[in-house]
Length: 266
Image (cartoon, rainbow, N blue to C red; front, side, top):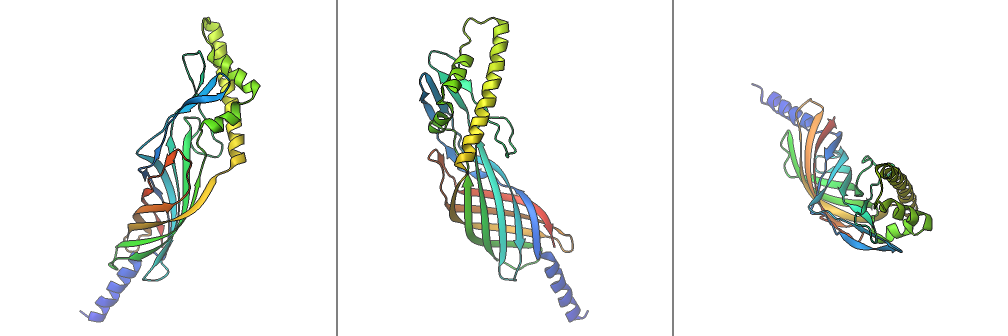
């Protein structure tokens, strides 16, 4: 067999195993992030507010674009969004049962549910392959990160929402259910729904006024990408450690993210 033919075939196989450009999506949980609970505290006369926390991490997903400019380095652009849920409630002095708060934030994919802390980041990474074998491409790297995160529904935030006589009176009215007959309790349920819609709108308005918290930092990563010859599909996994970034005081960032996904690659 002609040695030059074998060498050329091997070179073609290796070339087809690496994508010049690729785009994909991935599962991106964050590890170690914790949110501190806030004890019940007054937000207006006779009304208190408190919220829970979470620990252990955040669920998330993301998207990636990568380009193999040279055999030596690759460039990746990644956008991840992660979120953690927590409980929140209003408590009226002298009433046993708190009023849970459900928030439906416009523009988020979570719908009506417990409040959520949402963090996202845009990463620009330069990676260096550890080996140049076909099909599997392990690498190390790092780069720049642009952080964005939402508010936490804490006492000061809520105080700005219900520190109005009309809203405070609605909260007190909904909370007072003592000695009511079934028909009156049904009316209370309607009042609770109205209160929920009012609070939702106030939260959305205040969140729009405050905007997202933004900051800059960086990351280091280790990962691997795999692609069979000719087939325009690639799979990848990255482990990233972040540094920098500015978060609300209730958030203790874990700074670790795992990305597992795949996509179209040429």
